[in-house]
Image (cartoon, rainbow, N blue to C red; front, side):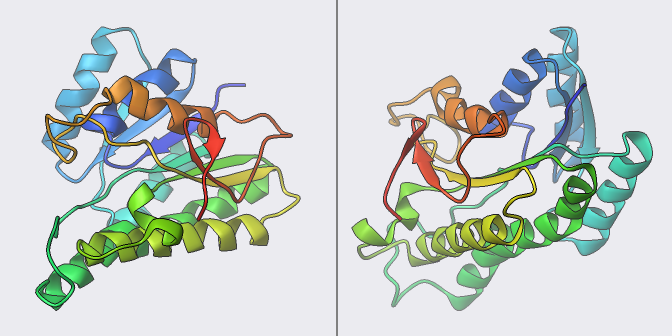
Amino acid sequence: MIRIVLVTGGNRGIGFEVCRQLSRKGMRVVLTSRNGVDGEKAAEILLREGLQVAPRPLDVTDPQQIKAIRSFIEKEFGQLDVLVNNAGVYLDEGVSLFDVPVETVRETMEVNFYAPLAICRAFIPLMLRNGYGRVVNVSSGAGQLEEMDGGTAAYKISKVALNALTRIVASEVSGQNIKVNSICPGWVRTRMGGPAAPRTVEQGADGIVWAATLPDDGPTGGFFRDRKPIPW
């Protein structure tokens, strides 16, 4: 059976590499991006590599676009097997909680938490209907309460919320062969991570791909880095 995958923010960085690696495993990947032209250009690269990728525009904060992408997937494939909530923003690096504009906090939460919530609500019913699903929420060590410190509050709070979503959804679909996990890819050399980051995009994508392809007896409701559990 060919698995159908949806990756948000798939046009560059970690998301693009996840699309590549899952396609190489024989999956049919729907590569989404806020800018449709950017998504088409990214998909062309993978298509030239002989991979099965379908580009689609998706602003994850737009309910109508979420509804449209669900309709496309249901009509085109009749199923969704893997959801990778990868799209995210990092707007307040190093900014004090007392200085970050409330609008920045709201925008960060919209993309990093409310969007994955809405997308889970849209697509997990398809997984429940078919009795199979893998949901990967791309989180960050910045969202670990155990190591929480000051600064970058909007981003950190959004990832704490995303981790809570992982736990709640995993519990609500328990016993349905749907695995829901948070993955920290580490500090990766992307536009967001910057050139000083120690990890390549291939290394950053590895844990996400692992969680997207877990066997039926794999873990759920966990937080992982390098395929190993880390504290919440």
